[in-house]
Structure formats: C-alpha cells, structure tokens
Image 1 (tube, one colour):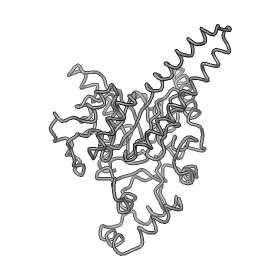
Image 2: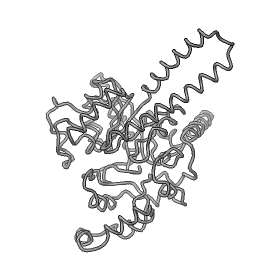
Image 3: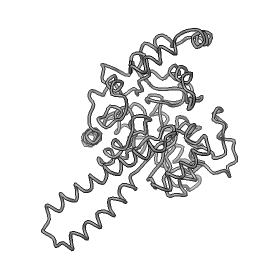
Image 4: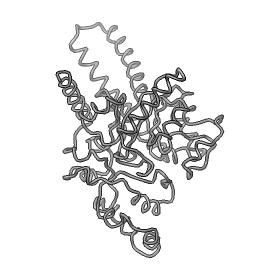
Length: 391
C-alpha cells in the first residue's frame, strides 16, 4: 500500500506516518520548482522516522535487563546507524514529468536529490518517461520517438541505486514504461482524483490494471525478463478495495484517502469539502479547471493529454460542462471568469475552485491520522480474506 505523491498535499510527515504503518509513503516534489521546500519536507520525513526509531529503542531498552555504560554506548551507536539506513531506505519522492525536468536546472536538481538523499524510490507521471534532451511535451507521442541512447529519468535514478516507479493511464504508456525496464508500474484509472489522462484516452482502474498485469506476464514468458510489480490507483479508499485489487495486481496507491488525513499539508478548507455527503456521482474527470487555471498561470501549465483532473462537481463544472469552444474563447477574452475564479481561490471557496477527489470520496467520513488509515485498511482487508476462505 502506497500513499500518492499529491502536489501541495503529500509532505514529509504524511509519508513518514504511512511508512511507520508498513506502507510506502511518498513526498510530492510536484513541479519541482522549489528545491529548498522539497528538502524541508525530506528533513521532516527523516526527523519523524528517527523519532519513531528512538521511541522504539527506548521502549525495548526499558523492557530489557540493565546494561553497562559501555553496552549502552554500543547500542546507541548501532541505533544511530540503523536510524540513518532505515530513513534513507524508506524515502520515496514523486515528480510531475512534464515540468520537473523541463529545464537544465531541473535535471541538475533531480540528480542532486538522487545523489544526496539516495531515495528508495522515485515516481514519475505526466509523462512517466522523460528524455534528458527532450524539450517538447506538447505532443503526447513525442516521447516515444526520441533517440533511445539519450539519458532518461529512469537511467539516472538507477545510476544512484534508486527504484523507478512509472504511473501510467493507458496500455501505450505501460508499454513505454516496460521498454525502459522500470521497477514498478502504477495503473491510474479514470476514477482517480487529481491529474491524469483525459477521459477519452484513459481507462478504468480495474480494466487497465488487469490488462497491464497480463501484458507484463506475457512479456516475461516470451523474453524471460523479470516480473514488474503492478499497483492499482483510482477510487481506492478501503480494505475491500485493496482485496479486490489484489486479485489483479500486487498492491494499491491511495490519494484521496490520504488527502483526508491529519498529516496532509493541503488547504484545510478545501479538505473539509471531501467530507460532505458525496458519492461517486459527485466526481467528474474534466478539463474545465485546467482550461481556467492554465490561463492564470505563467508557468507549469498542464499540457495535453494530462490537462484533466478528477475533482468534485461544483458551480464551475455545472456552468461550463459542455460549453463550446466559441463560448470558452468569449469567456477568456471578454468576461470576468478568470478574476472571479482567482478571487474564489483566494477565499478557498470549494464551490467554485477545483477540489481534487477520486470516486472513492463517497466512502470517506472523517479526517484521520495516516497511520490509523493504513491500519484500518489492513484490518478490513484481512477480515475479508479470512471470510473468503470459508466460502
């Protein structure tokens, strides 16, 4: 079980608490335009991991026989080394492909993070595979036509011993990831919250996960290559969803459920919007918000085909869903749409601005600690598995 690297939501504390519960927590680098901000979250992750290990060590020592001062010093030295290794081995970071590595500085900072912190894993999406000499992210197919001798985000990660996880939304993207020998593939279905492939290009979580798993197994039989673990993402918030996914793949990635956690660093007012009496009917995958927000941004605009989000329906989606290109152009040129949206964003008005959420939001009833979320999911999953044994 993994927590998704949600930009503006997934910080060091959330990632650490998920790791403490036995999952794999990701810190979001997002568009990777603020290196110091990412390093602050990495420091928080390390500090929390070390505090947890210190507490565990003190508990064990208090339960054991008294030790000599020399023995205690040896234990402390061993524990310091163990803390360092454990923290580094669990550190995992997620990046947005089209923006994080769109400049020379981005590549330099990426290599700096890999060299300095030696994370266990990095995850990329939109797109998952990025060539070092590719400056064109406007064409969805451009990344498949580059010189395969060029360095990629995958080869750079592996140079530093870091596992590479590719998030994909289609079979085409999965095949590209497989060609680059990634270490795991996340299948993001259209039910997911946040950015992903447009609805007409993406697939449902279960169909995509099942077919990517089958594709990988078939490839292993014909090429004798290693099996790539597959994780499902999209609409998964509970133990029953985990059990369902395990019929098709190796694990799951949860976003919205951890957006609704105490450790989330997202906007508290928008976070509360997740707890309203929602169902999957209240979630839409749409380009509406990116059309508006891209006009307001000076950089890091979302390109096709990733300019699509899973979000809660609200006044903006009701007003603009199905509008023609002419109506959009008129609104951008001659109305106060952008100013109204910008003003609503400053007020954190969830009935106007984008509140990212997947279709599983209807089963989220409270904001809880990330550790407890993982443990409840595990407990529910084990109960279901035990019940299935008796059928």
